[in-house]
Length: 416
Image (tube, rainbow, N blue to C red):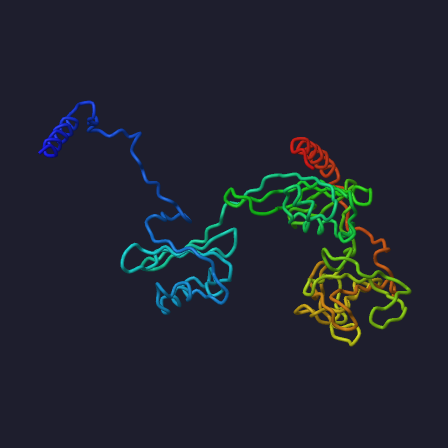
């Protein structure tokens, strides 16, 4: 009986509390706009993604367009799609590693409404599936902002760039600018640099390194300056010049491979590691991993490209009536390199290997001057064309502006 009475009392108290005015929520027939929750639609490639089932992935090795779309389209539809746009894009040549996105309709058909493919970082193809599919090639927004970095080398250029949180890609670009003046395989401790370059942004996100505008590299106690200057805008001719307007580009590159090391120098008396005897070594050996690209050090015509028992796979180039170069022990000769073919400075002519009389992967670089083999590291080559006299005033004015800008940026960035 006592339990029944207690239950009735609790029930009455709950009813009274429910109708007590202090516990009521105020009634607002017009909801406040400031408190309304509005769901924002996500835009992806200019498409309201929330309206579709979105499938995003990366093309895997061996996959074709059919592999990507077969779950949603039949083979005939895919073939018609390829044919429809073949004059504008090549859908048969999608590549492993590229990004793609399929927007599926939110119904039982699961038919694609859009297909988006990114052939590179700078654009994407957007196909809309209507009664007749339509194609848009969208260029992404690309901008550049000036940046400046400086550092002192203690171990390697790559490690120094990483230490100062600079793009390591700058190492490659600097090696190309200074290829005729600095041997990047022989950098010394406390060599230093200042680089003024363009940071590339794709849709406001940092992506890569654009052009180096100016650079100063201190090597073996000497500063070597490089300034980018356009000499003929109509013909799109430009180059890097020093402060006197002389081109940094020489007749020959310093070396036929990038970022390697000299394993054996030119010598009239060297102990041969295979033949176990002293003999002249009339080349410079650059050790590098198998498959490393080998570059023609100057413009010229290929006069030999074949295999010999001691040379292995090799290429020989006549540059003019004075100079000839040869590249030995290749793992393979590059496609299209054969006698009579004209090659340009910096063109890939083969790949590092150990064919012929060699103990490990390297390229033996041989150099002839007037028919006699010489040490290319001791040769002095003439520079390319300087800044034309008609543009020297403009070049001098640009130098003053660049140096002032670099000094200002350096003082703000406080580089290492």
